[in-house]
Length: 472
Image 1 (spheres, rainbow, N blue to C red):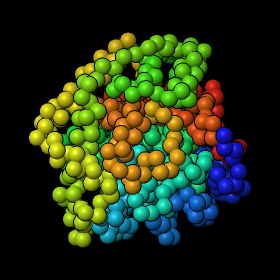
Image 2 (tube, rainbow, N blue to C red; image 1 turned 60 degrees about the vertical axis):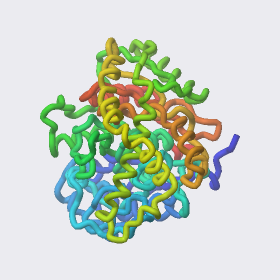
Image 3 (cartoon, rainbow, N blue to C red; image 1 turned 90 degrees about the vertical axis):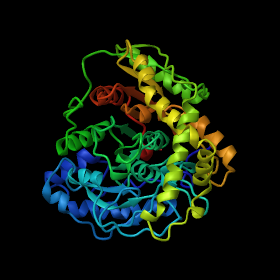
Image 4 (cartoon, rainbow, N blue to C red; image 1 turned 120 degrees about the horizontal axis):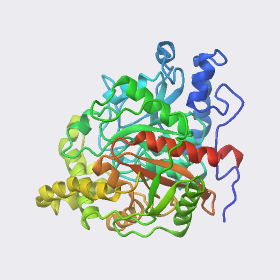
Protein backbone atom coordinates (compact mmCIF):
# COMPACT_ATOMS: atom_id res chain seq x y z
CA UNK A 1 0.00 0.00 0.00
CA UNK A 2 1.29 3.46 -0.93
CA UNK A 3 0.81 6.29 1.56
CA UNK A 4 0.11 9.78 0.32
CA UNK A 5 2.86 12.31 0.58
CA UNK A 6 4.15 15.26 -1.40
CA UNK A 7 5.61 12.93 -4.03
CA UNK A 8 2.37 11.14 -4.90
CA UNK A 9 -0.48 13.65 -4.61
CA UNK A 10 -0.83 17.27 -5.67
CA UNK A 11 -3.47 19.95 -5.27
CA UNK A 12 -3.75 23.71 -5.49
CA UNK A 13 -6.28 24.52 -2.77
CA UNK A 14 -5.20 27.58 -0.78
CA UNK A 15 -6.50 30.75 0.84
CA UNK A 16 -7.03 32.86 -2.27
CA UNK A 17 -9.97 34.13 -4.34
CA UNK A 18 -11.01 30.59 -5.32
CA UNK A 19 -10.72 29.13 -1.82
CA UNK A 20 -12.59 25.82 -1.75
CA UNK A 21 -15.54 27.12 -3.80
CA UNK A 22 -17.22 25.02 -6.42
CA UNK A 23 -18.29 26.89 -9.57
CA UNK A 24 -21.72 27.89 -8.21
CA UNK A 25 -20.17 29.12 -4.98
CA UNK A 26 -17.45 31.11 -6.74
CA UNK A 27 -19.96 32.70 -9.12
CA UNK A 28 -22.10 33.70 -6.12
CA UNK A 29 -19.08 35.26 -4.43
CA UNK A 30 -18.28 37.23 -7.60
CA UNK A 31 -21.90 38.30 -7.95
CA UNK A 32 -21.96 39.58 -4.36
CA UNK A 33 -18.72 41.50 -4.89
CA UNK A 34 -16.74 39.43 -2.39
CA UNK A 35 -14.34 38.34 -5.15
CA UNK A 36 -13.51 40.05 -8.43
CA UNK A 37 -13.67 38.16 -11.72
CA UNK A 38 -10.18 39.39 -12.62
CA UNK A 39 -8.89 38.26 -9.22
CA UNK A 40 -10.47 34.80 -9.69
CA UNK A 41 -8.89 34.44 -13.14
CA UNK A 42 -5.50 35.57 -11.83
CA UNK A 43 -5.53 33.16 -8.88
CA UNK A 44 -6.77 30.29 -11.02
CA UNK A 45 -3.95 30.89 -13.51
CA UNK A 46 -1.47 30.79 -10.63
CA UNK A 47 -3.01 27.56 -9.32
CA UNK A 48 -2.72 26.04 -12.79
CA UNK A 49 0.94 27.00 -13.02
CA UNK A 50 1.55 25.46 -9.60
CA UNK A 51 0.08 22.04 -10.34
CA UNK A 52 0.64 21.69 -14.06
CA UNK A 53 4.39 21.30 -13.73
CA UNK A 54 3.54 17.86 -12.31
CA UNK A 55 0.16 17.04 -13.83
CA UNK A 56 0.84 18.15 -17.45
CA UNK A 57 -2.87 18.74 -17.99
CA UNK A 58 -2.76 21.95 -20.06
CA UNK A 59 -2.24 21.99 -23.82
CA UNK A 60 -2.32 25.75 -24.37
CA UNK A 61 -2.84 28.84 -22.22
CA UNK A 62 -5.05 31.60 -23.63
CA UNK A 63 -2.99 34.53 -22.39
CA UNK A 64 -4.77 37.40 -20.60
CA UNK A 65 -8.36 36.17 -20.22
CA UNK A 66 -11.39 38.00 -21.54
CA UNK A 67 -13.85 38.83 -18.76
CA UNK A 68 -16.72 39.27 -21.21
CA UNK A 69 -18.61 36.36 -19.63
CA UNK A 70 -18.41 37.90 -16.19
CA UNK A 71 -19.78 41.19 -17.52
CA UNK A 72 -22.52 39.48 -19.51
CA UNK A 73 -23.88 37.48 -16.59
CA UNK A 74 -24.76 33.81 -16.50
CA UNK A 75 -24.83 31.18 -13.79
CA UNK A 76 -21.02 30.84 -13.90
CA UNK A 77 -20.22 34.49 -14.56
CA UNK A 78 -16.50 35.01 -13.94
CA UNK A 79 -15.71 31.37 -13.15
CA UNK A 80 -12.32 30.37 -14.65
CA UNK A 81 -12.28 27.20 -16.72
CA UNK A 82 -10.69 25.33 -19.62
CA UNK A 83 -11.95 23.93 -22.92
CA UNK A 84 -10.87 20.49 -24.07
CA UNK A 85 -8.47 20.59 -27.03
CA UNK A 86 -10.77 18.83 -29.49
CA UNK A 87 -13.20 21.77 -29.58
CA UNK A 88 -12.55 24.99 -31.48
CA UNK A 89 -12.11 28.13 -29.41
CA UNK A 90 -11.49 31.24 -31.47
CA UNK A 91 -7.83 32.27 -31.54
CA UNK A 92 -6.50 29.06 -29.98
CA UNK A 93 -5.16 26.07 -31.93
CA UNK A 94 -7.11 22.79 -31.87
CA UNK A 95 -4.65 19.91 -31.78
CA UNK A 96 -6.86 16.91 -30.90
CA UNK A 97 -3.94 15.47 -28.92
CA UNK A 98 -2.23 14.44 -32.15
CA UNK A 99 1.27 14.80 -33.57
CA UNK A 100 0.01 13.99 -37.08
CA UNK A 101 -0.38 17.68 -37.99
CA UNK A 102 0.49 21.19 -36.85
CA UNK A 103 -2.66 22.80 -35.44
CA UNK A 104 -3.67 26.29 -36.48
CA UNK A 105 -5.70 28.84 -34.50
CA UNK A 106 -9.45 28.43 -34.87
CA UNK A 107 -11.27 31.21 -36.69
CA UNK A 108 -14.51 30.74 -34.77
CA UNK A 109 -15.89 29.14 -31.65
CA UNK A 110 -17.40 25.69 -32.13
CA UNK A 111 -21.16 25.50 -31.45
CA UNK A 112 -20.61 23.92 -28.03
CA UNK A 113 -17.98 26.52 -27.12
CA UNK A 114 -20.59 29.22 -27.73
CA UNK A 115 -23.08 27.36 -25.55
CA UNK A 116 -20.49 26.92 -22.79
CA UNK A 117 -19.53 30.61 -22.94
CA UNK A 118 -23.18 31.59 -22.55
CA UNK A 119 -22.93 30.40 -18.93
CA UNK A 120 -20.48 33.24 -18.23
CA UNK A 121 -17.25 31.24 -17.80
CA UNK A 122 -13.81 32.74 -18.30
CA UNK A 123 -11.66 30.48 -20.50
CA UNK A 124 -8.00 30.25 -19.49
CA UNK A 125 -6.88 27.77 -22.15
CA UNK A 126 -7.29 24.22 -23.42
CA UNK A 127 -6.70 20.86 -21.80
CA UNK A 128 -4.86 17.81 -23.10
CA UNK A 129 -6.50 14.65 -24.40
CA UNK A 130 -5.17 11.42 -25.94
CA UNK A 131 -4.99 11.41 -29.72
CA UNK A 132 -8.47 12.13 -31.13
CA UNK A 133 -9.99 11.06 -27.81
CA UNK A 134 -9.63 7.37 -28.65
CA UNK A 135 -8.01 6.21 -25.40
CA UNK A 136 -9.42 5.88 -21.86
CA UNK A 137 -6.16 7.30 -20.52
CA UNK A 138 -4.43 10.55 -21.44
CA UNK A 139 -1.06 9.13 -22.44
CA UNK A 140 1.18 9.50 -25.45
CA UNK A 141 3.81 7.58 -27.36
CA UNK A 142 6.44 10.30 -27.15
CA UNK A 143 5.29 12.83 -24.56
CA UNK A 144 4.62 13.09 -20.84
CA UNK A 145 1.22 11.73 -19.74
CA UNK A 146 -1.43 13.61 -17.81
CA UNK A 147 -1.10 12.49 -14.20
CA UNK A 148 -3.78 11.80 -11.62
CA UNK A 149 -3.60 14.41 -8.83
CA UNK A 150 -4.65 11.83 -6.20
CA UNK A 151 -1.55 9.80 -7.06
CA UNK A 152 0.72 10.99 -9.85
CA UNK A 153 1.82 7.48 -10.75
CA UNK A 154 -1.69 6.67 -12.00
CA UNK A 155 -3.83 7.57 -15.00
CA UNK A 156 -6.17 10.55 -14.86
CA UNK A 157 -8.45 8.72 -17.28
CA UNK A 158 -9.42 9.75 -20.76
CA UNK A 159 -10.19 11.18 -22.98
CA UNK A 160 -11.01 14.27 -20.88
CA UNK A 161 -8.06 13.55 -18.62
CA UNK A 162 -6.55 17.03 -18.71
CA UNK A 163 -9.81 18.65 -17.66
CA UNK A 164 -10.39 16.11 -14.89
CA UNK A 165 -6.86 16.51 -13.49
CA UNK A 166 -7.19 20.31 -13.24
CA UNK A 167 -10.59 20.17 -11.57
CA UNK A 168 -9.66 17.41 -9.12
CA UNK A 169 -6.50 19.29 -8.16
CA UNK A 170 -8.51 22.44 -7.42
CA UNK A 171 -6.93 24.54 -10.19
CA UNK A 172 -10.39 25.43 -11.57
CA UNK A 173 -13.85 24.53 -10.26
CA UNK A 174 -15.08 22.84 -13.44
CA UNK A 175 -13.92 22.23 -17.00
CA UNK A 176 -15.24 21.16 -20.38
CA UNK A 177 -15.30 17.46 -21.21
CA UNK A 178 -16.91 15.34 -23.90
CA UNK A 179 -17.81 11.70 -24.15
CA UNK A 180 -17.82 9.33 -27.14
CA UNK A 181 -17.40 6.07 -25.23
CA UNK A 182 -16.98 7.17 -21.63
CA UNK A 183 -14.69 10.19 -21.92
CA UNK A 184 -16.58 12.33 -19.38
CA UNK A 185 -17.40 9.51 -16.98
CA UNK A 186 -14.07 7.64 -17.07
CA UNK A 187 -11.83 10.55 -15.98
CA UNK A 188 -14.50 11.61 -13.47
CA UNK A 189 -14.30 8.13 -11.94
CA UNK A 190 -10.49 8.14 -11.94
CA UNK A 191 -10.25 11.60 -10.37
CA UNK A 192 -13.15 11.53 -7.89
CA UNK A 193 -15.41 13.93 -9.77
CA UNK A 194 -18.99 14.24 -10.99
CA UNK A 195 -19.33 13.58 -14.71
CA UNK A 196 -22.71 13.71 -16.45
CA UNK A 197 -23.05 12.53 -20.06
CA UNK A 198 -26.28 14.11 -21.32
CA UNK A 199 -28.91 12.55 -23.55
CA UNK A 200 -28.06 12.72 -27.25
CA UNK A 201 -29.18 16.13 -28.49
CA UNK A 202 -29.55 17.70 -25.03
CA UNK A 203 -26.41 19.81 -25.63
CA UNK A 204 -25.62 21.32 -29.03
CA UNK A 205 -23.55 19.05 -31.30
CA UNK A 206 -20.33 20.15 -32.92
CA UNK A 207 -19.90 19.80 -36.67
CA UNK A 208 -17.92 16.56 -36.45
CA UNK A 209 -20.67 14.84 -34.44
CA UNK A 210 -23.37 15.84 -36.91
CA UNK A 211 -21.46 14.13 -39.72
CA UNK A 212 -21.18 10.74 -37.99
CA UNK A 213 -23.44 7.89 -39.19
CA UNK A 214 -24.14 7.25 -35.51
CA UNK A 215 -23.54 10.23 -33.24
CA UNK A 216 -21.99 8.85 -30.06
CA UNK A 217 -20.47 12.09 -28.70
CA UNK A 218 -21.98 14.34 -26.02
CA UNK A 219 -20.41 17.44 -24.47
CA UNK A 220 -20.55 18.48 -20.85
CA UNK A 221 -18.33 19.24 -17.87
CA UNK A 222 -16.50 17.56 -15.03
CA UNK A 223 -16.99 19.13 -11.62
CA UNK A 224 -16.39 18.57 -7.92
CA UNK A 225 -20.05 19.00 -6.92
CA UNK A 226 -23.42 17.79 -8.13
CA UNK A 227 -24.84 21.30 -8.09
CA UNK A 228 -22.22 22.42 -10.62
CA UNK A 229 -23.28 19.63 -12.98
CA UNK A 230 -26.92 20.61 -12.51
CA UNK A 231 -26.21 24.32 -12.98
CA UNK A 232 -24.27 23.63 -16.18
CA UNK A 233 -27.15 21.63 -17.63
CA UNK A 234 -29.69 24.32 -16.70
CA UNK A 235 -27.50 26.97 -18.35
CA UNK A 236 -27.10 24.83 -21.46
CA UNK A 237 -30.88 24.38 -21.62
CA UNK A 238 -31.44 28.12 -21.21
CA UNK A 239 -29.18 28.69 -24.22
CA UNK A 240 -30.95 26.10 -26.37
CA UNK A 241 -33.63 23.61 -25.34
CA UNK A 242 -34.08 20.47 -27.43
CA UNK A 243 -37.78 20.50 -28.42
CA UNK A 244 -38.16 16.70 -28.43
CA UNK A 245 -36.69 16.08 -24.96
CA UNK A 246 -38.45 16.73 -21.66
CA UNK A 247 -37.06 19.88 -20.04
CA UNK A 248 -34.71 19.37 -17.13
CA UNK A 249 -35.08 22.76 -15.49
CA UNK A 250 -33.32 23.75 -12.28
CA UNK A 251 -32.39 20.79 -10.07
CA UNK A 252 -31.35 21.88 -6.59
CA UNK A 253 -31.54 18.77 -4.43
CA UNK A 254 -32.93 15.26 -3.96
CA UNK A 255 -36.48 14.29 -4.83
CA UNK A 256 -38.96 12.85 -2.35
CA UNK A 257 -39.95 10.09 -4.78
CA UNK A 258 -38.35 6.72 -4.06
CA UNK A 259 -36.96 4.86 -7.07
CA UNK A 260 -36.63 1.33 -8.33
CA UNK A 261 -32.99 0.88 -9.30
CA UNK A 262 -31.56 -2.02 -11.27
CA UNK A 263 -28.18 -3.31 -10.10
CA UNK A 264 -25.66 -4.34 -12.76
CA UNK A 265 -22.35 -5.28 -11.06
CA UNK A 266 -20.91 -7.00 -14.15
CA UNK A 267 -20.80 -5.80 -17.73
CA UNK A 268 -23.44 -6.86 -20.28
CA UNK A 269 -20.60 -8.10 -22.51
CA UNK A 270 -19.41 -10.60 -19.89
CA UNK A 271 -16.45 -8.69 -18.45
CA UNK A 272 -16.16 -9.36 -14.73
CA UNK A 273 -15.70 -6.50 -12.31
CA UNK A 274 -12.74 -6.53 -9.92
CA UNK A 275 -13.30 -6.92 -6.18
CA UNK A 276 -12.71 -3.29 -5.15
CA UNK A 277 -15.01 -1.89 -7.82
CA UNK A 278 -17.71 -4.46 -7.10
CA UNK A 279 -17.56 -3.60 -3.39
CA UNK A 280 -18.01 0.10 -4.20
CA UNK A 281 -21.09 -0.58 -6.34
CA UNK A 282 -22.67 -2.95 -3.82
CA UNK A 283 -22.07 -0.48 -1.00
CA UNK A 284 -23.78 2.21 -3.05
CA UNK A 285 -26.74 -0.11 -3.55
CA UNK A 286 -26.91 -0.69 0.20
CA UNK A 287 -26.85 3.06 0.84
CA UNK A 288 -29.72 3.53 -1.59
CA UNK A 289 -31.78 0.87 0.15
CA UNK A 290 -31.10 2.53 3.51
CA UNK A 291 -32.43 5.76 1.97
CA UNK A 292 -35.65 4.00 1.00
CA UNK A 293 -35.03 3.09 -2.63
CA UNK A 294 -35.58 -0.41 -4.02
CA UNK A 295 -32.47 -2.02 -5.51
CA UNK A 296 -32.77 -5.30 -7.43
CA UNK A 297 -30.61 -7.18 -9.95
CA UNK A 298 -31.02 -6.11 -13.57
CA UNK A 299 -30.20 -7.74 -16.89
CA UNK A 300 -29.02 -5.91 -20.01
CA UNK A 301 -29.21 -8.37 -22.90
CA UNK A 302 -27.20 -6.58 -25.59
CA UNK A 303 -26.21 -8.39 -28.77
CA UNK A 304 -23.19 -10.64 -28.05
CA UNK A 305 -21.45 -8.87 -30.94
CA UNK A 306 -21.77 -5.44 -29.30
CA UNK A 307 -18.12 -5.17 -28.24
CA UNK A 308 -16.82 -6.22 -31.66
CA UNK A 309 -19.27 -3.86 -33.35
CA UNK A 310 -18.29 -0.92 -31.17
CA UNK A 311 -14.63 -1.68 -31.82
CA UNK A 312 -15.33 -1.72 -35.57
CA UNK A 313 -17.11 1.64 -35.33
CA UNK A 314 -14.23 3.02 -33.27
CA UNK A 315 -11.86 1.82 -35.99
CA UNK A 316 -14.02 3.42 -38.66
CA UNK A 317 -13.66 6.77 -36.92
CA UNK A 318 -9.88 6.41 -36.97
CA UNK A 319 -10.03 5.47 -40.66
CA UNK A 320 -12.16 8.53 -41.46
CA UNK A 321 -9.79 10.84 -39.60
CA UNK A 322 -6.86 9.38 -41.52
CA UNK A 323 -8.72 9.85 -44.80
CA UNK A 324 -9.86 13.44 -44.13
CA UNK A 325 -7.04 14.68 -41.92
CA UNK A 326 -5.95 17.45 -44.29
CA UNK A 327 -9.02 19.35 -43.17
CA UNK A 328 -7.25 19.66 -39.82
CA UNK A 329 -3.94 20.75 -41.28
CA UNK A 330 -2.31 20.79 -44.69
CA UNK A 331 0.66 18.87 -43.28
CA UNK A 332 -1.49 16.05 -41.85
CA UNK A 333 0.26 12.69 -42.21
CA UNK A 334 -1.67 9.64 -41.03
CA UNK A 335 1.62 7.77 -40.65
CA UNK A 336 2.31 10.06 -37.68
CA UNK A 337 -0.89 9.02 -35.91
CA UNK A 338 -0.11 7.12 -32.73
CA UNK A 339 -0.04 3.30 -32.56
CA UNK A 340 -3.53 3.03 -31.03
CA UNK A 341 -5.06 5.14 -33.81
CA UNK A 342 -3.19 3.19 -36.47
CA UNK A 343 -4.15 -0.13 -34.90
CA UNK A 344 -7.82 0.85 -34.82
CA UNK A 345 -7.66 1.91 -38.45
CA UNK A 346 -6.01 -1.35 -39.52
CA UNK A 347 -8.49 -3.45 -37.54
CA UNK A 348 -11.34 -1.65 -39.31
CA UNK A 349 -9.84 -2.22 -42.75
CA UNK A 350 -9.96 -5.96 -42.03
CA UNK A 351 -13.75 -5.84 -41.46
CA UNK A 352 -14.92 -2.76 -43.40
CA UNK A 353 -17.30 -4.79 -45.56
CA UNK A 354 -19.32 -5.51 -42.41
CA UNK A 355 -20.04 -1.81 -41.81
CA UNK A 356 -23.78 -1.90 -42.74
CA UNK A 357 -24.39 -4.79 -40.33
CA UNK A 358 -22.30 -3.13 -37.62
CA UNK A 359 -24.34 0.06 -37.85
CA UNK A 360 -27.64 -1.82 -37.97
CA UNK A 361 -26.81 -3.86 -34.87
CA UNK A 362 -25.50 -0.86 -32.93
CA UNK A 363 -28.67 1.09 -33.67
CA UNK A 364 -30.79 -1.87 -32.53
CA UNK A 365 -29.06 -1.81 -29.12
CA UNK A 366 -31.68 0.75 -28.09
CA UNK A 367 -34.36 -1.95 -28.07
CA UNK A 368 -32.47 -4.27 -25.71
CA UNK A 369 -31.42 -1.40 -23.49
CA UNK A 370 -34.98 -0.09 -23.20
CA UNK A 371 -36.09 -3.59 -22.13
CA UNK A 372 -33.54 -3.49 -19.28
CA UNK A 373 -35.35 -0.47 -17.81
CA UNK A 374 -38.73 -2.20 -17.55
CA UNK A 375 -39.65 -1.93 -13.90
CA UNK A 376 -36.67 0.32 -13.15
CA UNK A 377 -36.16 4.07 -13.05
CA UNK A 378 -32.35 3.89 -13.19
CA UNK A 379 -29.54 1.38 -13.54
CA UNK A 380 -26.59 1.31 -11.14
CA UNK A 381 -23.26 -0.14 -12.32
CA UNK A 382 -19.53 0.46 -12.17
CA UNK A 383 -18.09 3.10 -14.46
CA UNK A 384 -15.13 0.84 -15.24
CA UNK A 385 -14.52 -2.88 -14.79
CA UNK A 386 -11.43 -2.36 -12.66
CA UNK A 387 -9.77 0.36 -10.68
CA UNK A 388 -7.61 3.14 -12.12
CA UNK A 389 -4.44 1.68 -13.69
CA UNK A 390 -0.91 2.84 -13.27
CA UNK A 391 0.51 4.96 -16.05
CA UNK A 392 1.91 2.76 -18.80
CA UNK A 393 -0.70 0.00 -18.53
CA UNK A 394 -2.79 1.58 -21.31
CA UNK A 395 -0.03 3.56 -23.04
CA UNK A 396 -0.27 3.73 -26.84
CA UNK A 397 3.28 2.34 -26.84
CA UNK A 398 1.90 -1.04 -25.70
CA UNK A 399 1.61 -3.39 -28.72
CA UNK A 400 -1.86 -2.94 -30.23
CA UNK A 401 -3.21 -6.50 -29.71
CA UNK A 402 -2.29 -6.38 -26.04
CA UNK A 403 -3.44 -2.77 -25.63
CA UNK A 404 -6.89 -3.29 -27.14
CA UNK A 405 -7.40 -6.37 -24.97
CA UNK A 406 -6.58 -4.29 -21.90
CA UNK A 407 -8.87 -1.44 -22.98
CA UNK A 408 -11.83 -3.75 -23.58
CA UNK A 409 -11.30 -5.35 -20.16
CA UNK A 410 -11.41 -1.86 -18.61
CA UNK A 411 -14.02 0.10 -20.59
CA UNK A 412 -16.84 -2.43 -20.34
CA UNK A 413 -19.81 -0.34 -19.15
CA UNK A 414 -19.82 3.17 -20.59
CA UNK A 415 -20.11 2.69 -24.40
CA UNK A 416 -23.71 1.41 -24.36
CA UNK A 417 -25.04 4.81 -23.31
CA UNK A 418 -23.11 6.47 -26.15
CA UNK A 419 -24.53 4.11 -28.74
CA UNK A 420 -28.10 4.37 -27.45
CA UNK A 421 -27.85 8.08 -26.62
CA UNK A 422 -29.04 7.70 -23.04
CA UNK A 423 -27.82 9.88 -20.16
CA UNK A 424 -25.56 8.58 -17.41
CA UNK A 425 -23.56 10.03 -14.57
CA UNK A 426 -20.36 9.03 -12.78
CA UNK A 427 -20.20 9.75 -9.06
CA UNK A 428 -17.44 9.20 -6.50
CA UNK A 429 -18.24 6.21 -4.29
CA UNK A 430 -17.51 5.89 -0.59
CA UNK A 431 -14.73 3.41 -1.40
CA UNK A 432 -11.14 3.97 -2.50
CA UNK A 433 -8.34 1.75 -3.75
CA UNK A 434 -5.53 0.59 -1.48
CA UNK A 435 -3.50 3.49 -2.85
CA UNK A 436 -6.31 5.91 -1.97
CA UNK A 437 -7.54 6.57 -5.50
CA UNK A 438 -11.25 7.22 -6.08
CA UNK A 439 -13.61 4.54 -7.40
CA UNK A 440 -16.59 5.77 -9.39
CA UNK A 441 -20.09 4.35 -9.71
CA UNK A 442 -22.47 5.03 -12.57
CA UNK A 443 -26.20 5.62 -12.88
CA UNK A 444 -27.90 5.43 -16.27
CA UNK A 445 -31.42 6.44 -17.24
CA UNK A 446 -33.85 6.49 -20.12
CA UNK A 447 -33.52 9.25 -22.74
CA UNK A 448 -34.27 12.58 -21.09
CA UNK A 449 -33.80 11.32 -17.50
CA UNK A 450 -31.13 13.85 -16.47
CA UNK A 451 -33.35 15.30 -13.72
CA UNK A 452 -33.69 11.90 -12.05
CA UNK A 453 -29.94 11.28 -12.35
CA UNK A 454 -29.12 14.63 -10.75
CA UNK A 455 -31.65 14.12 -7.94
CA UNK A 456 -30.17 10.74 -6.96
CA UNK A 457 -26.69 12.27 -7.20
CA UNK A 458 -27.69 15.09 -4.85
CA UNK A 459 -29.10 12.54 -2.40
CA UNK A 460 -25.93 10.44 -2.33
CA UNK A 461 -23.71 13.52 -2.04
CA UNK A 462 -25.74 14.73 0.95
CA UNK A 463 -25.75 11.28 2.56
CA UNK A 464 -22.00 10.86 2.27
CA UNK A 465 -20.04 13.95 1.15
CA UNK A 466 -17.46 13.15 -1.51
CA UNK A 467 -13.84 12.66 -0.43
CA UNK A 468 -11.67 15.76 -0.81
CA UNK A 469 -8.11 15.66 -2.04
CA UNK A 470 -7.19 18.58 0.23
CA UNK A 471 -8.02 16.44 3.26
CA UNK A 472 -5.36 13.81 2.50
